[in-house]
Length: 464
Image 1 (cartoon, rainbow, N blue to C red):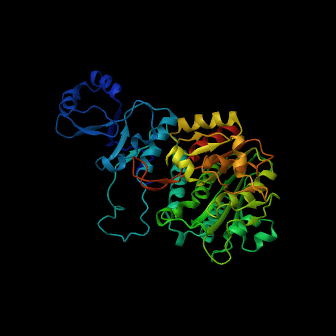
Image 2 (image 1 turned 90 degrees about the horizontal axis):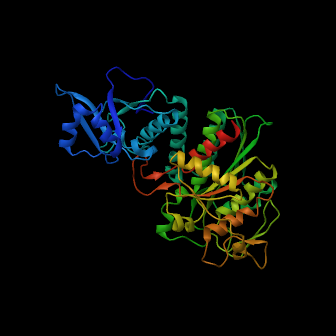
Image 3 (image 1 turned 60 degrees about the vertical axis):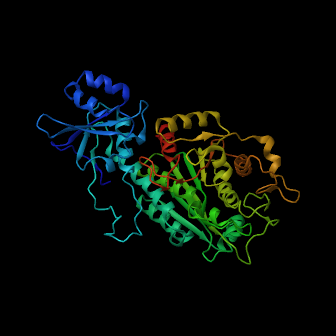
């Protein structure tokens, strides 16, 4: 976190963060001496706009930053790049939560994925001086660090090309995370999946040269409330025999975005030492074309005992999640969350920035929506509309992984998963994109963490 400082140096430059309304008040009060300069410059406090203000001797007295009327984590997301190099202090009384949000947004704006760039090239910015924020006194340094480092972990995992982030490498990342916090990570690999009654994971991943596996992390007091996270870990998705187009395949290194997000959430929970018994289950596979790949029309067995007819080999994520959810559901955790880059239909309905959330619990949905709003971590509840369940009926098996209807693809995918969660009351399914198509303040183009800051706040509130 090179753009954050725990201490405030005496020569720190003041940063006045003002909305259009608060600018007028400021200009009539403490900012009155600077009013002629501000008005002459035409500064209107538009979000993201910056105006350096000189003092009477021509030196820098401070800097104005335009922000929106509504609190927004990302209001400070470009500061480390657009402000002149210096250490800044916020000249505003902030609550603890607000101070944390300012620091988190500031630091996340400095994220970059440059592991493959040659040091010293013209676009290598690793050594370019940046604007540094002195974390406001009301802020919690450990909380800020925890969230920034966890989101950065998610981004790094998703951004890494599939060549270097296959099932094995994903398992190693999980192992390292578990060991860091004193957890245990077990991995079931290849044909051992069949011996452990995980046939669906094995079937989807068996065609790949890199063996499929189930990653299983446990952490915390066994007697504490159980919180289980399940993440889709398709490290590359060709579509299988229902092969994707070139354009459709281009970003499929990110099809393990669900697993990356649950690892980021797990890191937050463990780093904060929340009083829960945490379990993380990640089925990690590649969906590729080979002579032993599953075919449309095949029927697969599952751990739950339900049979799945394969309507489309490109709807593989829900199949591997079926086995992992069956394990999780058997323990009836107090909270079960699964995250997956599951359907294009969710993106058609809600776009890339608004993950679709499904849960049978109105109380849980309301609480989660509140935390999402407070943390600028958007999501949108979608209906588990049971009348659509017949769209994925099968004539020869218990369920079809795709069905024939072109309608409600995200809803039917959620209903598919619901058949494998029958004992757990508080279950949430998240259909997310895990990717920024374009750069915005605090959110560079590429891999992204979605919903996990809201879930972390929910878990803290419910169990801490």
